[in-house]
Amino acid sequence: MEGDINEGSVPSYYREVHQAICSRTDERVQISVFQRLLSGTALSITVQKQITEHVNSADGFLNKVSLYKGLALIALAQQGKPPSPKLLENFIQELPKPKLGEPKELQSLRMQLVQENPLILSLTLAELLMKDTINVELIPEKKGLFLKHVEYQVTSERFKVSVYRRYSDFDVFHELLLQRYAYRIVPALPPKRVLKGVLTSVSEREFIEGRRRALARFLNLVARHPFFSEDELVRTFFTFSGSDVQTKLRDACKKLGDEFMTCSYSTQAKDYLPADIQAQFSSSRELIRNIHSSFQKLRDRAEKMAERSKENATDLQMFGKELSCLGSDETSVPVLASGKSPWVALKQAVKGLSVEFSLLSEKAVEQGRREEDDVVEKLNLFLDLLQSYKDLCERHEKGVLHEHQRALQKYGVMKRQMMSATVQPKEQVSVEQLESRIVQQENAIQAMELRNYFSLFCLHQESQLIFTYLPITSHILGSFVNSQVQGHKEMGEVWQDLHSKLKCLFGDSNGLQTPPLSPK
Figure (cartoon, rainbow, N blue to C red):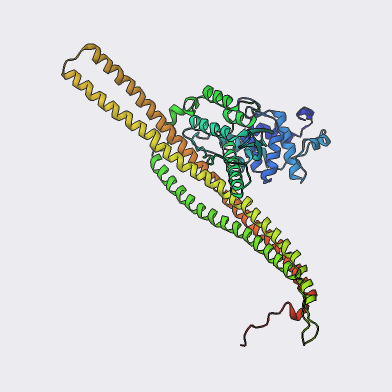
């Protein structure tokens, strides 16, 4: 569709916007600048994501015609129309004008990007969520006579491709991510458990489903990470459809090396760090630890609510079954002295009520599913991120800092040996070897110091990533409130139908008024 847009037919406003936000070195526009432009339009995240997918970006840039296409799609969306390239066919002569404000005011988008410190993450939650959405579906596949292994279909909305992965593929991918990005948040994998027998028991099915959900959360956090999303290792996992994905992943990681070796500013990380970086790190860590604790409690309460909805569904179902059994009792009714017994008519009425209780049970099940999918799952996603941050802090302290301290201790021992050798004459070869070892150790310490500063640099960025995700709280609360409103509305309608049915069956005075059980 991009070739159908004639550059000469676009409004002058398009050219002014392009001039305001294009790169200083050429006519291209960085995709991050375009995303900032999108985030200021007040369009929904879903629509922004659709527009981003429709424009052609190469190596993180949009050419002039791609930008014009994006501006036209923004204008369509602002008019309430779907941002589809097909609709642009009707505007070849006169493309619609988007409402973005004065072009001169848009220059700040480019200037902000130019002036950014690499230490600072200038991303919003909406931009992170727009990067990709990963769906993981369960595909049971029987292998052998006694064991049934599980395969997953992994679908990336960004790459528009589905691939099939086993748990062992996830395991290798996770291991390589930790090797390549040792100083970044790498979410943990759910535990692996040997499956003894086929998937027939409820507990086994629950475990498999829980693991599927956890794997989906893991992949979404990875796909949306600002430093992982463009990595070849990640791209390979989401797109390679060959038979030996693990070898392909290992080859990619071997070719790339770890982030410290490939990052252009890894050796200058110290220059970007604030003087009080340690104090900032300690403060951020303490705050994130408290947030983690609170969100764990919220998640536990939400899980209990979802479980209660399921239990309520079971109770309502059993209540209806008991009414049905009561109404189906064929025991003969004795003729009493008072005349004809009302029990026969009452039985039929009671039996008919089981339909409404069955429907109530179904609504309660749906409510529990909404609470689980829309609320608990979002809480678990954020908790996975927070836990991964805690793990990163421990890796920093037990890994880089510990190795640095050991290197310094070893260096101190060598220096003392060297001093001893100068006082007590030793063979020239032995002294030279000791001097060589000291030089090697000094180089190792220097490398350790550089890695330590780079680790702090990354930790500072990952702390910012956590705070960027914090607005997800509003998403979670919105999902929680919406699920309760919808659930109570649907069940309220059934209860109201049941209320009307009781009036018809028993009349206003018998079925709806509850007499006192004892005299007042």
